[in-house]
Image (cartoon, rainbow, N blue to C red; front, side, top):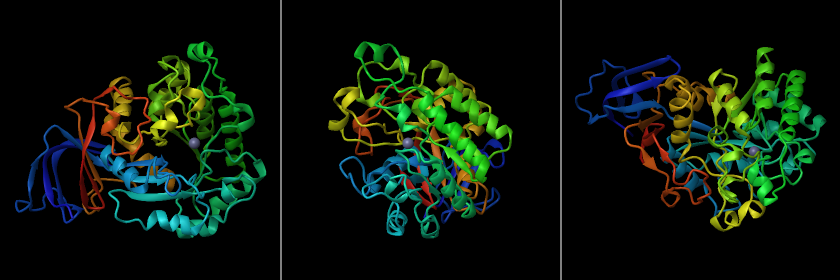
Length: 420
Ligand SMILES: [Zn+2]
């Protein structure tokens, strides 16, 4: 259990709305009030560092079970802790798919990990889209949300039934909002590279139509409805309008969709292929505006590991997805705090209270009396992204060679320290 005093650390707590320099005292894994007598504890000079509640990522793929060469729970959890995360929501598009109580329990009962796994489970049996899974049993086993991520639940009647049942269970439904028939074989948004290399185009309507459908079903059912990895300006506008009407709709912005536009893809490189694809410049602008004005209340990485071999033969042959856990903090700080002037309190909220609110779980906080879930961030030493240094088993990042301004240097999860 962690016991230490972090002296003169800049503490960011979105629950209190506070940003102040003070000593952070942790004794036996619990956060102590400032007046707690602490001279017997190890004193760590943390001047210049930021302390925040440990970060939450509601969208990670650990490929466990099914593809241990790309990632395992162990390697994925190590990558998460190294990236500053204490809580991750694992996606159920594993092999087999996460539609059983056994699958959910296996995720939760792996307690030797440096982060806490909060599993989501399938909306439909086998992620096939035809029949709603046993949501009641999955929730009782510990599933925090339902999603068929990787595929949209395209049948409106199936989705509506799932949303009614999820609402009774107080769990959100999270949708990979892409209409398959509209996406077709598309791999990239319209841009000069697509034209130059003859790559099939993935039109924005494939996402926007799905987002509108999900909002309509949200209005019908009252279910907390979450749109995963938003990439289009029109999706942001639709969510803004729905939230203004009071609908329980949320959306997530991924670091890659916030940082990169299709026009900036440097080459026919499989590490820039993800689903949905990178938006155009106007979409990136709209996504950033959506985060700044509170339309999009959380960041999420969509950490999607794939082996080097599978990603090394250009856009057409690569699978969809890129990893993000070890670069997310630095990338979102650079684009949102440095470039857009987002307040550090709001930035921390998008990694902590935003995700927890989506899941209906207590807000992460540095308040005295809480079990210590804390990340320490260093903003003084920019670092270079070298994929071969990742804890993740995979290397599929579009950020190789970037210099990032922030790095997690220590993660304390449930009172236990993970040195990064
Ligand atoms: Zn997805």
